[in-house]
Length: 415
Image (cartoon, rainbow, N blue to C red; front, side, top):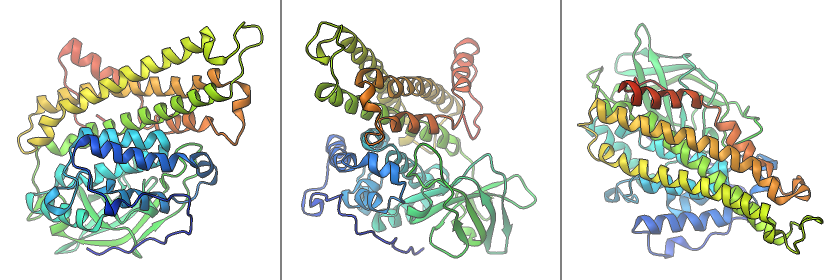
């Protein structure tokens, strides 16, 4: 599979360190520190880039230069050799600076992992070697609520046709994960294809009020052919099922959790800096500084406590999932289901806390902070936009059914 380089802009706002000359990160802490360096660059003009809504070619280039795109790739192929808990923390760090770029990186990690989730051993080896060697950035045209991509069996190859209303990563991706249903069956097929090809048209119609740089618009797929050997998880045109195939949902739901928490962290950090430096004390409060006012101390203490608690839970749930990811050929249904319940619980809490933090920071920053130039509203807009992906009420229901009836969630596109 070959890919085409994306155009680069002449934007010089992102001037990274000379990472190529520095030692590669070796430990999880090193990788999170590297993500922090990237986040510092992204934070400089995050508000301006949110307003502009331009395609984030430079930002993706920054992720590649830093090595973050190959974080989960096997070290034998030049990847970072890290595991999911580190990837989630990196997503959180990037999202604290820019929620859109955090989402793009998190989705990239999931689709980069797609071969392991679904593929045969031979496919896993081939995809992971190419992805690490070529620093592929992944997008995904996999919207499960759109059953409008069909696949024709053309002998030794498959041909995809149809349309998806969402394709996160679209124009900034090197490769796209396609999903459709084989004609005359209810069999879903995944395949990885080059994004830059005549049969794939990205429609540039993502115009939502949040996560504005995620390039999540619709895509048309016309006569995109792939060999049967690239149909993920198929051998001799027959799918080889295993429980791990269904881990895409809890894995990406934890991606959601961590970029929500990252956005909330960025909001709290940005607001606290503004309150320290600019917010005036209330004229009837008897204090000379805003940072000495009891209501400010209570507000920031309350929001930070809630955020830190959910971050700790998110880290714990990620660690609990390691046994599953390390033994992907032998996962049991109970292991999978119990993990999904834990993910559902932290997803519900992360959504609530992120929405609260991103909306209430303005109580601490004050009326002057509502200027469009600061764009403090972007934090709430970003969380609110993506958190509508699937209702958290159904996540809480999963937890309740497990506790009261020992009922495992049925694997679906959302559970």
